[in-house]
Amino acid sequence: MNALLPDSVRRTANRLGYAGLIPFVVLAPASLLDAHHGITWSDALFAYGAVILSFVCALHWGFAMALPGLDERTRVRSLLWSVVPSLIAWPALLLVPSDAAVLLVLGFVLHYVQDRRLARVADLPGWYLPLRLRLTTVACIALIAGAFVQWPY
Image (tube, rainbow, N blue to C red; front, side, top):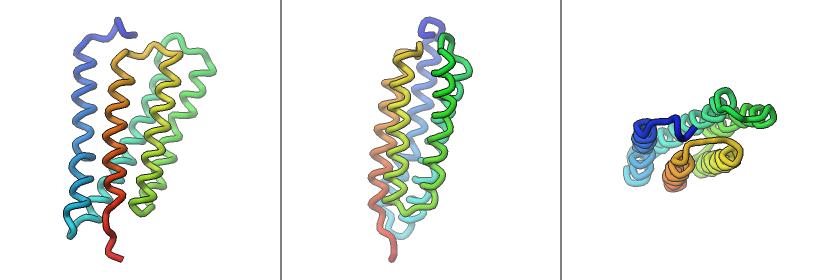
């Protein structure tokens, strides 16, 4: 797979991935620094985190469907895993920031662990795991920071 992907694909994936971090790096400080709207920014941060966690779960669905050379067991595991992050993300929308942060960070970390497992048996591009690690790290730091928003009660 590495040889089949042009460098422009890597560059585009990097740009889109880093652009996807903008809401994390804007909303986390906004939720902490804007006392008047902090809860609104916090809600937006955790909603965005849930959306992105659901988005990354689709990667494993796509891998299961399209990656050449995977055995049936790996494909089934990838399909099964691909729905788990959404099931983690959805209840986070109903929780206070500290609990939402724990659940979403857990989801992002578990997803990265699954990425690493898949990379051991699949021919993923060499840039994929380093990019996923950087994106996961920034998202998790932002979510942890956002957990410290002050609620009015």
